[in-house]
Length: 441
Image (cartoon, rainbow, N blue to C red; front, side, top):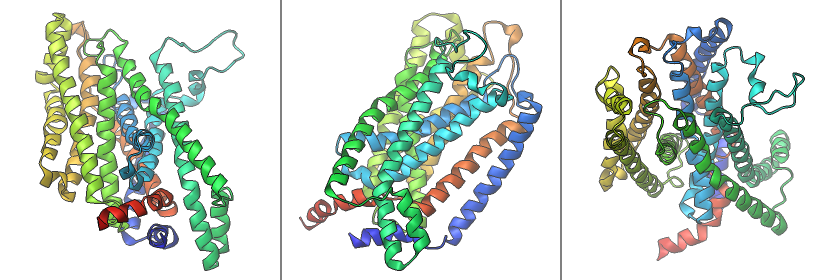
């Protein structure tokens, strides 16, 4: 148990490595460029983007849905696998939860910026009493459902993540006291809320963890279901379909686990955590990617079948246009990355390969971005009236907003990995005995 404390706390107590500084510098440059683009957009208006009268949603909402999807794996690993008593989650849940928090913040930035001069009206999305008479938000709008779903998801995920950190903060505090570092001891004592490690304290901690897991489990399913209703409740060909809720949830878990793998493989290498994030963990996550990737592939095929079976000309044309229209390259990139590439994980040698897993995890997230782009842009750019058909071309400011979120996400995750324990020490210690027994047997 002392080895676990030493291995994990060492990253918090020591100075940042050169690799950490390099990664943080790159993230900071991306963040600075993104902030510049965002500042110009807010000053000039969203006309700086490549939007037009036909394609009113494009990169902004594509990126919003993509980031919300990435945020799904953290709460799923923490909540659902906790309720099912899956011990393999214990080495990966902390980083996955942090990823959820940062991804949801990145996602929320896009609808806010899409409002244009958001300081004049972002609060209209909240059902607050106001001085303008009985003027309320439209509760029939799925866009408002998003506000409630995502804010609730973010709040519960944040509390769940911080709850798990409290015992580990106490460990770092106690080590700081022994080493005579009073400043660090004071900071981490405040962060741990004076945790004393008593039996009653642990009992309350575990009770609260189970309650939060129970709250989070339906949220995992509901959040991306509600995001999908932004599209499914419309009458636009390509969007008006009942398969969207389960299809979006499966796709979110699919992309979320891919991003968890990308981050954990980097963290594993940089912080030398090979004994904690093992090939076994990586293989199990790859199996989940196979399952969810196959569900997404079935959803793609089902969409085409329903478009043909429904005999609605506009719906049929929407899907033909996706595959063979001007954005054919995006559609086939999506199919290659999301349907074909995950099937390589059926081969055990690839499934247990660090390099192959890292490459394919990035490929999957590229494919999932293209999926959101295809759903949004190809459904909008050619509607019922050929006279209003138009193409969307992103500008530097579209790209800049996306780059901003990568810069913020990278900086936030690197700061988390440096100042907070990236592995849940308390939970890993709780399974040491059973792990050693398994090895000896």
